[in-house]
Image 1 (cartoon, rainbow, N blue to C red):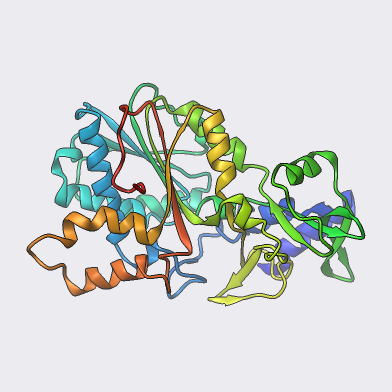
Image 2: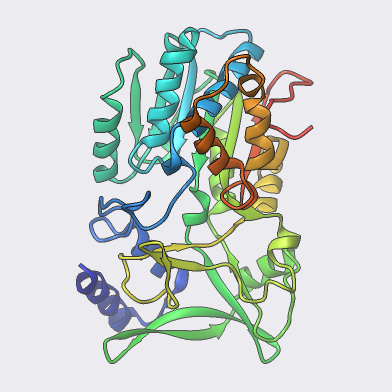
Amino acid sequence: MVDSLLSILQGEIQEHGPIRFDHFMEKALYHSNLGFYSSGQTRTGIKGDFLTPVSTGPVLGQLLALQLDELFATLRRPSSLFLCEQGADRGFLAHDLLDSICQSHPNLSSVVQLHIIEPCPTLAQQQKSRLAKIQNNISIHWHSDLSSFKPHSTPVFFYSSELIDSFPVRLARFSSGQWMERFVTEKEGRLEWMDRPAEKDLLSRMDIWKIPRSEGFMAEIRPNAATWIQTLSQQIQQGMILTLDYGMLAPELYHSSRSSGTLMSISRHTPSPDPLINPGRQDLTAHVNFTELIEEGEKSGLTTLGLSDFSGALTRLATPLLHDHQPMPEKWVRNFNHLTHPAFFGKSHRILIQGKNLPVGFRPSIAPL
């Protein structure tokens, strides 16, 4: 499998010349048959390549169901409400959310529809198999891209977990007084780095984020993030958007102390020193610039309701359960601690909460005070 994708990339480079890193990352992660995510292999959990908040257990889905129920009540119990997930992987979070709706929020089960944005047929089939195990009458629909999801006037509860960090990035490196963009070339059967002077469109993005111009400084720019949030805002007339991911606001992300950037490659729970080796067999990811999602969202008509780390956001959501007279089961507490403890996901992962045309003064429980 590695040689097949490697040979495809080598052939493209030999025919057209060096390729930008974001193009390489797109192929490595999403090639129709050989990409890291699109191949259908198990990627998350103990048996996969890395752990995610979803792979630790069902508590995240249960807590999101609490926020969904609050939104439903705030909107005065509409006759229809769409859930929408993008980047659902094998469908675990959607399963946990629907299961919680059926078990603990039966008032929602006759109202909601689930829509999943999934361009990969292999993953869509895995999602269908997993969600078929839930005994309910909730209708589920799949869409190949975000633009084909058209809720019209139906309110939407949109959520994603570790989606944006896997959007391809362009790589910039400051060298000898100028910004260089990193390309991928090949030599003697191996993929190698090659730098070219950065073009105007990339330079303008570097200026927007005031990225330090110090020798050797590395930075990632995600070209599709702004388009994604703009499209999402265009599709939704009313609703809430929850973006769960690891990342920072721009001043922290591009701080002078973070001179090596945040690009990571990982396989079998082990970081790899070289993002270019084993294309299709290792994950490639970079931290999310939440400032970009906030600012582009506001330009597109979204309201920023808050940005919170997992520890604060999920603890606020869980407060009614934690204060209940019945203690939570030990397994539930372990899962909750994995999500909220600073040593696990509590501080590294954040939730961006955005809304559109929600009632004035509404402050969701998940948002910081």
